[in-house]
Image 1 (tube, one colour):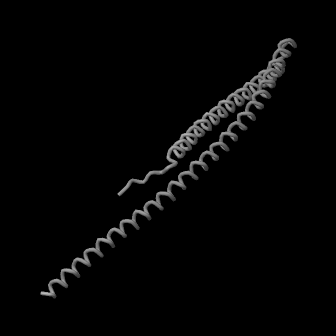
Image 2 (cartoon, rainbow, N blue to C red; image 1 turned 90 degrees about the vertical axis):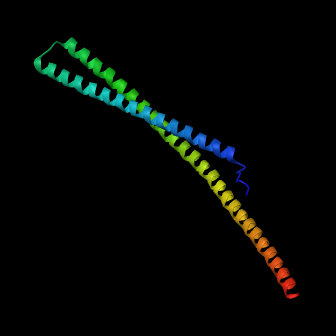
Image 3 (cartoon, helix red, strand yellow; image 1 turned 30 degrees about the vertical axis):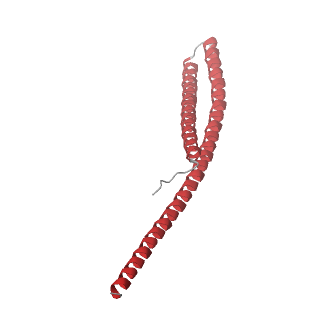
Length: 156
């Protein structure tokens, strides 16, 4: 019996590789998004800590230059926070894009895999029909031989 040979196996392999690469890209995008989220969280924590320090210093009565310095630092951290939020939005879009690409690649791979399965099913049906035809032919030949042998025996 002949082996099943899918004509488009190289395309299917390519689609599997593309899907694998898209999975790696998505994992990297998610990792970058998580790092950006942690950075934003750290900046927010710093802002909160410095504001608490400023409030404590105001209560204790500290000179104005130190308060201005703390206020300037808070504004700098707020600018960093704004920049971090923009970066986080960009990273989220990157995650969404890579997710869409992964879905597309997975769908393409599934399409080719379904085609392969259909071709395999068709091949198996044809093989089964050819095998059945072979066995029917063998049974027919055997029947004719037995019939011929029986007619020779009856003719004696």
